[in-house]
Image 1 (cartoon, rainbow, N blue to C red):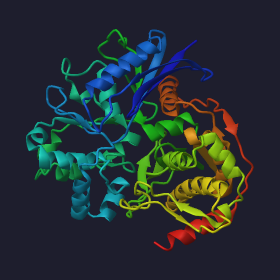
Image 2: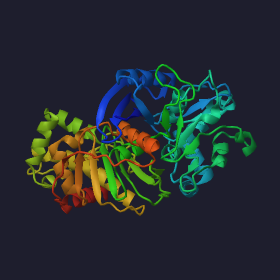
Image 3: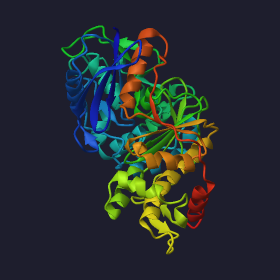
Image 4: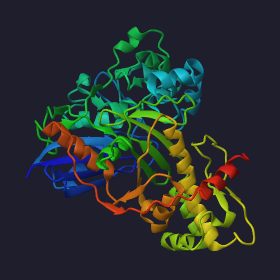
Length: 475
């Protein structure tokens, strides 16, 4: 049996999944936690990776491995291969003002055309500007800039302060496309934007800054200097960003849209058409299979259900049962669920509002249903934005913990005008990384099956979104 391994180095933890190359079956898994915070010493990821590999029984019998990781984080290295300062993660918002400054200097339309996206505080470019303005002595030491999965792959291959070969850093299009200094249409870095972020007057200064080599989906490197956890010669895939990894793990192809309902929500589509949304609503990322992955994010998703379940003093299962006892449209009750502001649409100071309360609609079932409808309508608005980038949606894969609630799946089939399927719960980023490892090993993308647990019959009810749009028009 030939085995391949996939890693998901996420914000919260590191997961390792080892799969059979022929069938894709999961053979064993491992896990380790990451520290909390928005600023983290990358060394903790390295410790967690080795711990998760050990928890998975080691890699002695594994032929190839690939790492998927949280996007956007800034890892800056000096000429000795040492990390200059703790990494700023995607969820560190201190660079919000830097993002606004860069947009003012370059223009939203130019950013969208050159990089596919308009930068926000999450993106690496804005963090580099923050570094230049607030820690100029650290910015001056930069010899290489990497993303979390780039750095972990480099360390796994035997590089670091003890073997500082910066030119051995590698990445892929999906993760590079989240930096705001990479053009995923031409597959080239935009060093002019890097110059601007670091406030360096001429590109000559930045020509010396090493950026990871961008590998194709089937390309690989090997572990150059072996260690107890990673044997010399082990094949290593390019790696990928987390959303691109999930798309690979789900087997998503052109026409598929993934709606992920976690603490926050994401909607992304697999397409062969690049996105260039100068409004900044849709991020024009690349995928890990040679195409594109336009994406929107919402701040409010599963925690909407947490809040309303707490208010009604019920479990999530009980909330779902209450919701299914109400008619579509919640008897006119509409929850606009911007409890913590919102990113899509960009309303950072907004709050949630409950509309349409009458003696008929002021019931526990109506409130329960309005919470699910409101959550899904916000994501459906995101799907509309993605479709506005020439994306054709033929199937919607609903994932995340909340997707397993029967009421969420059933109501999703009424909110979205696209057939909905619910895959079984799984670590899809790590599974996708294993797909890439198999691709690098065998030269072609494996077609491993994905188990679907629910496939609700299409039951589109326009009234739900019509009510939601009517509420939005009052803003």
